[in-house]
Image (cartoon, rainbow, N blue to C red):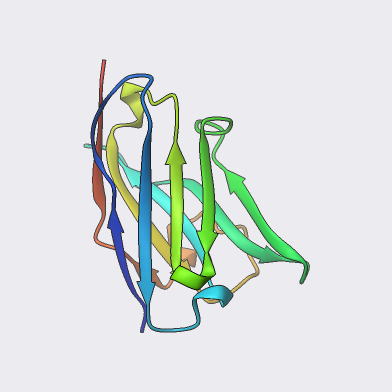
Length: 128
């Protein structure tokens, strides 16, 4: 069983930055594919970013087109934590942000059904 706890959300003006953290406990963190998703009011949960072990060489990050160039996902295996650095925030980035973990390395991990564990979410609100 893996427990995920997000933090770092809040209210920020458009153009500002936030860094979300997701602390994991249980399991072997370094082996997990870690993803970030978000859900805005009245909308379905959507993929934001993923970082996964690829080709037995390094961790590879991937992003939704809507955040590419503005968001950066990273991980610190020594701290069992994954981060989402969000820059140049826009009002349309307002949502509850969730981190998720999956023990598998295969698959795109763009779909929420691919993940085994979820955090409780943290609210990000971007004012115009």
